[in-house]
Each structure stands twice: as structure tokens, then as C-alpha cells.
Image (cartoon, rainbow, N blue to C red):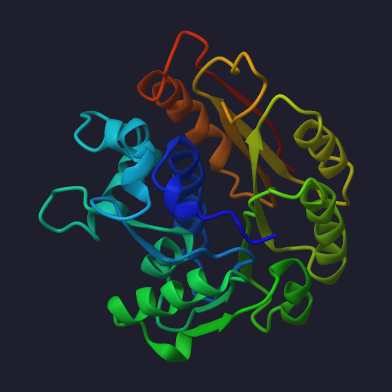
Length: 284
């Protein structure tokens, strides 16, 4: 199934949560001198226009990053995230939004590498164009027009034995929830020390909760689970009213920074009085 296009939802509350954590994880990972790989199983289109095209049809970014753009006194995770997005909007006006692989590239050093999967043919072409737009070094990049669920096997373990891996499928097929679990079970056997970031939607259906239960049973020592709800579930039972991240082998500093940032984020992105967040972790 290839109907999902992230451009309709870019910059929304889910992107804010996902990307503020991604920036923090990447910032921590590059503190060590040893080379690093960034692997993205569902990379998307790269850079998205916010003033034209798909993103203007729903304009979800206005209730996401739009609420943070000119906010004052943001905690560290949020201020670092906004600073990163501002690099792609140098005039200070929010016109472009960098997706996960572009933000990851922004944090990487010359000796680091990106390995990106995108199955949708149009988004794959946009992804190629996005990296040309930012004049990325082609030696750093490997873009593959294939399914990251299966393609990731060829990359693990990565040669430097260090990697941040983002797993961000659209979940338009209910089987994706189990595919995430199966892929991580296999990936951890191949590369137990990688940092894995798994995004999921908060819905009125059991699959996300079932996936989380299974993820916690995987062979790992440290993890962080954070979620954000921005509004009440819809009466008809459809639609996403929040999102979450499950991070395997996170930076040891991540829980404390989330504890500092999540109350602010829940308040800033609240659509109604049901806005809330959850945070649990195990750090060994």
C-alpha cells in the first residue's frame, strides 16, 4: 500500500515529538569521535514546502511547529529542535520543513553516513532532489527505493558498529505493527547496541498498545517510552489524537530532558483539555 503521503501532515504534533527526540539522540551520538551511521527505514520526501502543495490542504503544521516557532523560554529539547528547523528557514519565516533524514544529515559529521529507504516512487524522487538542494556530499548517502522493513537486514551490523536507526512507517496496513516487532527482534540479534527510535500513532484501536507490549519483551537493557496526546479521541473513533516514541538504547540523559520538556510541549500543543503526556523508562 502506497497511498500515504506525509506531506499532508508535515510539521504536526507528531513530527514535533519525533524530531525533538531525534535531534537530541543525534546530538548525543556525535559526542564520540568514532563514525556514525543514520539509517531510516521510511525516509519520506526530505524537505517539505509549507506554503504550497499538499501541506497547505490540511495545514497541520500550524497546530504543531507553528505554535513553537516564536515561543520564548523553551526547554533545551524544544529550543534545539527549533534551532535546527530554522537553519532551513534563514529569513526567519517558516516556509520549509526538514524531514527526519534532512535533520539527521544536519547533525552528521563528514565521516558519518546516511542509509535511507523510501518505497514510494514519487517521494523517492523528492528525497533525491532534497539532498541535491542542500548540496549533500553524495559519498555520505545511500538512497534505496525499497522497503526498509526488509532492506535493513543488509545494513546490520554497520561497519562502525554505531548507528541511530529511525523506524517510522505509516501504519496504513495493520500488519505494520507486527512487522515493526519482527524487524526489531531480528535487528537486535544482528546489532544489539544500536539506538532504535520507533514512532507510532495514538489511536482508538488495540494494535499500538499491543505493539508496545511486545516491544518491551525484546532482548534489551535500556529503553524510553514517551507519548503525547493533544486532544480528545474523536466521537466516531477514527483519526490520530496523539503519538509516541519507543527508544531502544537511548542516551542516558534523554529521560531527564524529556521530564523537563514534555509538560511545556503538552501545554503548547494542546487542542483541548485532554492534552497529556506519558513517560516511562528503564536505563541500565
